[in-house]
Length: 357
Image (tube, rainbow, N blue to C red; front, side):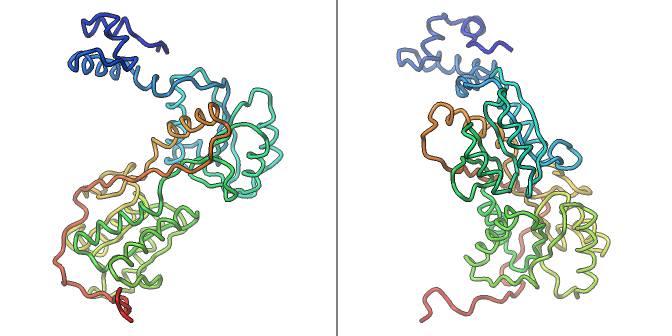
């Protein structure tokens, strides 16, 4: 696709003059609202608006460092799609994109430095790399570097990530709004990002004066797989009396939700008639065994494009303040969560109220 502004194409499609199209795209005020809307609508269809927003990326080669599983859709679909979004973000630039597998922790520092010091490496993106030593090296090597879904604890590198804590709080809050008070949380806590989601869930419980108890309210799964979630939830159901079952499960991923629903159905429980199920993910399995899944979508496809924009700003303003861009989640309301009557279930609350002495 031609990277230049397609002024002549837009003029031909809209039947407006080239000068009118040029004035609209330049942000001039001396055009009618009707003409402006026609030009902008056509420009969006041709991809011109994205190209204008992106501007020029002042480099020709970029290296993405990520865990090995990120390059295999079957191993980690989330990171795989993030890498695709990086490619999408570079679509309007003539940039050679290269990749290097790196461990999340205890990474090969020599391998990282070798790739970073190659003459053709002008900038880097680190995806899901938690090793603080690698972050230090990236900050010291002197080439622009942006983090995705990880953080530099020394605060020297810019980053873009989902707002995991707020996402966890949003998901739990939705269940509370639907009348649920007895909620079992099924999470994988292998990274600090999942701990942040759990912290957000706790925030929601606290805001409703509910006491969160790890032993009662949390099941921790070693991975995000459906099979391990099904086994864990099934074992828990076998040990729990029907009268003590929660009204809802809040699950930390779609495949985990699939395992949870399978376990519930094998124990004769219907979703959502008997127990509701909600996921924090919502991209991979919108429907599970004919159950349309309510979920909070974790921003994924936006991470790569926002990282490219952030890298672009670092190239233009290398001395600008460094920070982290946190992206909000999106609530997708479907059919796996039902509303229940207030007061149907009793849950322990904090003894200390807001105004207690």
